[in-house]
Image 1 (cartoon, one colour):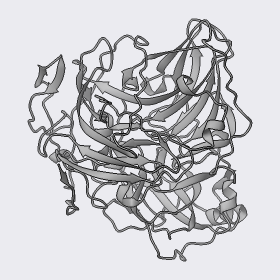
Image 2 (image 1 turned 30 degrees about the vertical axis):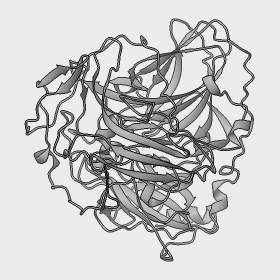
Image 3 (image 1 turned 180 degrees about the vertical axis):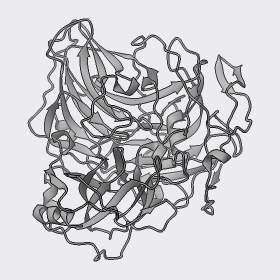
Image 4 (image 1 turned 90 degrees about the vertical axis):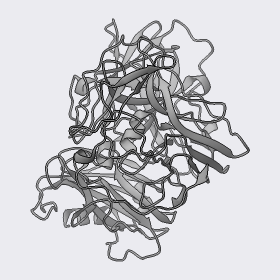
Length: 582
């Protein structure tokens, strides 16, 4: 095993499809205990075409919880990325996947849950156990076979060298090498997660399994009377397509990738046996491009009163005031912590449904077919509880990062305007207020260390984009609808609608923000960590660059330069004025 050293930036060729290296869809061999693996690596001129998938029996298999990893030394974990063999359904064979394992906790797909605690820093040594560079792993049209990896602790407040961002900002970990990331854990309790972030290969690696839960706790969270222990569960929700032999299929043939089968914690359309009591569910959208709007529908019955769903937490922590919802929109990379009350629903079955279209445009747009996936999983409620349910949903969940409203940060904040648009149809890009840029262009988002900024995202593209910023924590301020964009890409004065405050479930600490088309979406936060990292759309195909070589990702450099060119916000009224008169 060798330490990594920074490498030169090898800018990718301008035509991804021409350089895509593909494994044959027909060259599949069976080895070991029924493990299907690709047998060859011929070059193809066209991307792999996926689907339709074979459809196994829905709601047949019990959903599995990822095991919790134990430290291999005080304050230390070793996390190894490797090839695995995983069965996505009991009717299917094991197929080639990627997984993370820790000593004593082997995983064939996804990774074990690593639980951290505020005030107790840890080190995680990341080992790249993938095959040597030049070895194809999957029959996907991925841009290279370098097989480099990183590990990004999503929503973590760690310094840049441990943030796990792609080259050229940081060196990645080549096969056979390792790197140790330091996580100080100086932040409030929140539903963090981790995933690969290798340059142009993030989407491929996460799709194949390189992701896991990394929740942070503190000394306040145990005092909340929410369901805990065996009555608190984590659900990583994805969509996938499979070949007829049940092997994974994935491509960048389109600007986004949408699967045709739901996968929860690595199982296609599972069921979950629950008792008639309250449960806490951490819902992670780990899909490539798909947003979900979750709801509950009874199976074989006509009850109008579905189990009550209450949002108690979001990306980076708890909501000050829990809010009930009948449906919940969750975009890629967003997490919501939801208490579902099955009390009074003894011996009933309830399906977790989805009615979000693909791709997602307006946040309220509904597709009864859920973009091809109207059902996610089923909850089978038992006849009785095993013990008394003493949990409650309090009126307030005060934490160190949710007590003040976002407006309290405005007096000292400066306004930074950014944009999302398509220079050509199907080629989304990000940029500053004046122009669209790509990942390799010079940084334009350069907040001053310990400063507060409002970011106003102008989305001129036809899709909603979940915009994620690294190494900082934010609060959503709200949105303004734009009726018309000028030739210069700026909103036409007089066509901007009234300010729309966050929806109640969006009021908690966050770092991923749904930015719908023809809207200006604004969030505010304090930049407390120095260094170079990234901000990007968390539609993974957009982040990597799908049909074009332009990633929807930009450098984010927090340094010492005062940002006096940005206007002071001062107040909500002043912010509204600045937004209306760009």
